[in-house]
Length: 319
Image (cartoon, rainbow, N blue to C red; front, side):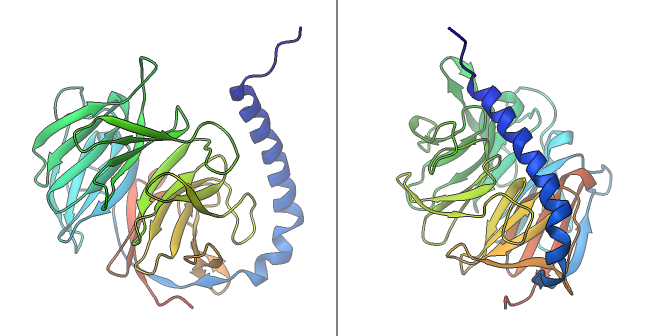
């Protein structure tokens, strides 16, 4: 009997087919629609690429509390902390697998008291005080094998820690003390399934938005893991995505989604409808591998990974 293809082979075939269709779509359809691109201006306030002594190396995520902004500086195995004006305050972490050390961290979540870091290379979540003092950690495992966490949030209503695990194509739900409670999703393309889940954020109503990278969409779940809506879909036209990596929401639950292939940020309404692309006069702002993002006090922070910087924009009222 002929051996059936495994999921990895199917995923590679699916990607190859999509890539061919993407190239066709770029050359056939995009020029005809470029003049009709709906853009939304956002003035660039400042960019930060260094703490004054060390240049960022492949940063990936940004988060904030009421007073400070935190950046994952993954290539330097540390967390960089700024004030709300962009001034460097302090950094913590170094390369290693000891307590408080990191091995290519990717995601983080902060409150006014705690910092939670997805320490990807060490297959664990580490928890710190707001000043960077190590408190504790817990590991991610699947069938006896270590799993790399990508991003995480602490849910405001349940207190549970929700972690995206791209290797197992699911979300892992942990108690505040690090006990595994549940898993959402599996490898697939149907609603509620994932192909490499990444950035997570929480909406003001408690729902959870997750970037589903290879399925080119953002899935939104309720606090029990049921899908409530899907934002985006595959393509290169406005309102479509090729390689989404980051998602952020504003106070009105509008979605800001970064596309690391098209190098732009698109805005969708709370119902998932396309609003605009960040840009001016029909031309999008061309970023350099935009990944993690944050909306904070009408400012949009965009981590541009391969430019090794974070760009901060003043958002204008959406049309």
